[in-house]
Length: 481
Image (cartoon, rainbow, N blue to C red; front, side, top):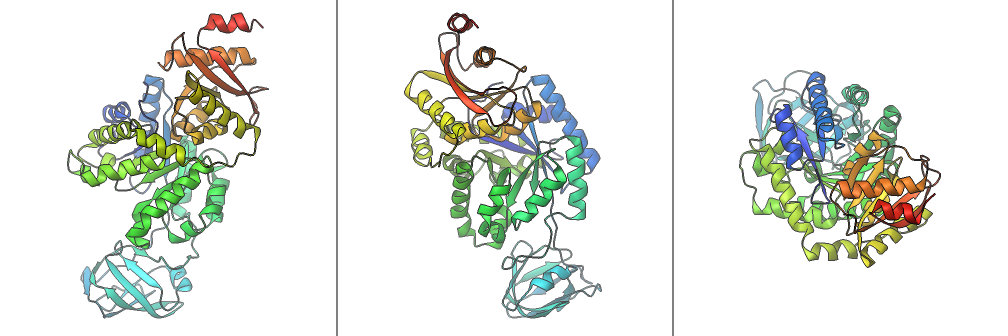
């Protein structure tokens, strides 16, 4: 199945999308990557969904990526004797470590790490920021606060602390168990929540031991401030606008999104824009115009992928949501303005032979009658560099490594094709020509650009580019050896 767009779609699986028929329909509607949200569902349920994805992969002959999204530590208040309490602006309220049930004056906050980081003036946000407080005084086991925005606080509501870096690891005990389960299962990507510093990412990568690539979720102000360092050690990025919009003023999120997408593209690392993209489609078969514009904006910015969360996991119209997202993507990518924006935002500091070869491939493809850029890859790095160029022609990635092909399903514009190992460049060209023809990117009258590294099957050796005909007879005639 050939996709008619370049941006990838990530669809979250859940109660509304757990059977073969629905997941297959999501794939055929346009999902390229399936997300397993480790915040919900048992390991058995996630294993069943994973097995279905791999069955669909076998049935369709197309590599499919699986992303396991780790929950991260959850900061929540305790319980109230009445179940809830009403807080008004100007009231005083205390958080402490006393496990007894709370009332309108205090409640347990069972996280001593938070008290260790607080200073007077720090903001505390409760229930996704609906209730806002300012710390007046604090100690190792309490924080006395003034209510700045009132509301009803109830059992186990979440707490956000946007102004300080908390002495908390990004991986809770649950996350460590989920990470090991997901890696043993064979997922391709791990999404790491609660990232505050590059050390959080390095810890996850150490635990993953190369079994899955690690994608950092940018959802805290500290992560945005340390983004360059976090990007350097991450395999990919998710702009998680939900929590980011709680901890920062909502008007700050769009500029941050734009900056992060551009930095990821310059680094040739895939970036997903996520959260509330088609939120109304949880209940409605039609999105709002604002949601459509939001999806389109992420595509115009050059994001590698756009994501559905509850829309496909628990909504009433999961397949319609994927179809809508795909239709918006095709419409945007066919807009001449899209090309102008993408090409004007191309900003790359080329330093290696591989950088120069992929840039040359894109320029040749745009200056002449080339139907596709075909890349042989072991690790996926060359394909990521080609994707960074955002060429006007399709990118066909060929590899004998199924795991590599699954991972690059997240990269902009890439069509992943499993091929046999080759020892000679001529056969690489022949296989590339066959793949371009088989998947409808070219016919025998067309030409393609082939990128590879010699010697073959060695990572990091991208050093050769050839313009080749798609007619195999011409390939053998011009290169008989």
